[in-house]
Figure 1 (cartoon, rainbow, N blue to C red):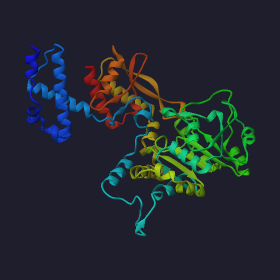
Figure 2 (figure 1 turned 90 degrees about the vertical axis):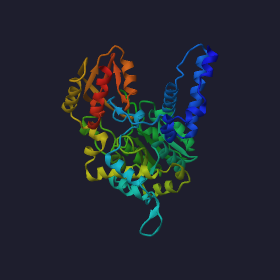
Figure 3 (figure 1 turned 180 degrees about the horizontal axis):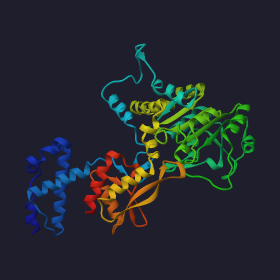
Figure 4 (figure 1 turned 30 degrees about the vertical axis):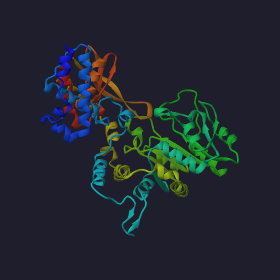
Length: 452
């Protein structure tokens, strides 16, 4: 029986010549399709030898070949709909870009550009010019520099300004950020000698003062990012650190993390340190991310004293860490919204934070009207991305009571446009705050298809 089935398997060449594989050959290429055909035939042989009797009809085999190709070459970086209510979702790409940034990227992709070309002089230019003036203007700093992320900004700063010298940090700020990266490890890679001061919950100005030696390069202040300390805590204000350090000819560098240029308190949230306030307090350099509260592309941004920025820009490590043309274009387009004063309208992070509760309730109720076993319940959205830990925004949630909540989550993730939701108290929850208006029809249709 098995012998007859094995003999019934078509040859590889016959399958490759079948007309239904022509689109696959055009899409994936001959080598990929050949490998898929061989893999399919191999699995069929294994099934037959195991005592099974799979269909050997040509159409059935070709369908398996198509399935193999689809699974093998399915894109891993795909657009999704974020219905979790986490605005800066680290796993979902952090801050979504404004439309203007997408248009700017497309314009850059269409052909050549002036990345490092000076049109006036007709010769080599610098990629620094595209963002530095705008960043300096918005943050009230002397100059600015852009690298590929905030960890790179810290690494470059330590390597160029504190290699083989002491950097003083509060024990309460030796944080671990996403993906297991720790501030002490970054400092080690930068060649700096870490000097810990204070305790995990209290660090006073006197602690920094006692730590200063002739070998001290800088005092480093690090934003706590994704956690907060409550109760019996004390931190040293930045301006006091500046006064102490500058009297001893020592630098002060602050990593503020989120890169807020607007006041989060205006949105009913805990006040987040702004870049402008850090510059005004006298920090020599301020470091922050581009894809968190700034609302732009992934980038590490350094603003501050012009002489220090110049030193960083000339360091050999800068070439390995510099931002590319697409990042720079997207960043400029994002920053221009702050310059025009319309960031709250056009930068998605700030627009989502500003959505009113009655608007969100109306969206959730529209969804509910078309779905069985759905309710609208009160809940909270979070900013995420290490920004404003513990601070929440009231929202309205679509709550679905189903027999197997985690199964529905998997089905939502398996949709043609995956929808990412969450489960709490055995109910599937979708938060309209992080769903854009143009995505609402897709969300509702997907839910209707799965639930009905």
